[in-house]
Length: 213
Ligand code: 5RP
Image 1 (tube, protein in one colour):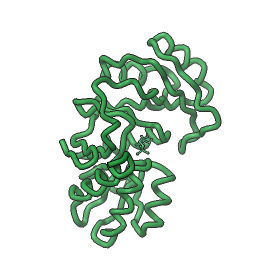
Image 2: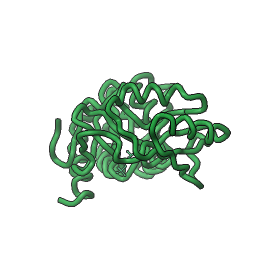
Image 3: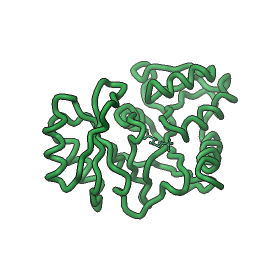
Image 4: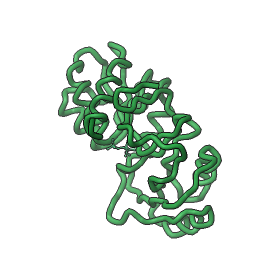
């Protein structure tokens, strides 16, 4: 199977976790696009979806799925999203698509997080993929200097604006031996909106291609 077939297989398998009549948290990315295509087939059997991005909102609506406001739904039974890297403890790097902040919010508000990936996303140690950090625009240089102190090499994703009106720094060459500690340390830097480490709230289930664990 190539990477896209593995993404599709993972997305199809994730549909088994969807309960009829429920509201589903939906992530962002090419893997999630396959999930939305599958969810469209059961649009009349779910209550609706809470979306993590403008991109997914447009795709959900086009698929005939009602998009609901998280403020109105309360906690969700299920969140389905992709990732850029997954370690053996189901901790993740996310944000390659720049939707990390809303993704982290919906993941936090969900009882079960099912992560869908192709097998190439599995790693022993997080950090080969540059770690996305969403920052308030005026804090870009300040945050970048603090990230250098933490051992990283931040690169501004120039020209990209998040759905929240902020900017992204992609941090290269981090050796992430303590994902929980690093998530906390970066999150505490003034001007950081969100860090794309999902370690304090990892995935509950990982589906890589047709392998579920
Ligand atoms: C978006 C994300 C995506 O889940 C991540 O980038 C994986 O994307 P894809 O499914 O296209 O490989 O975190 O912010």
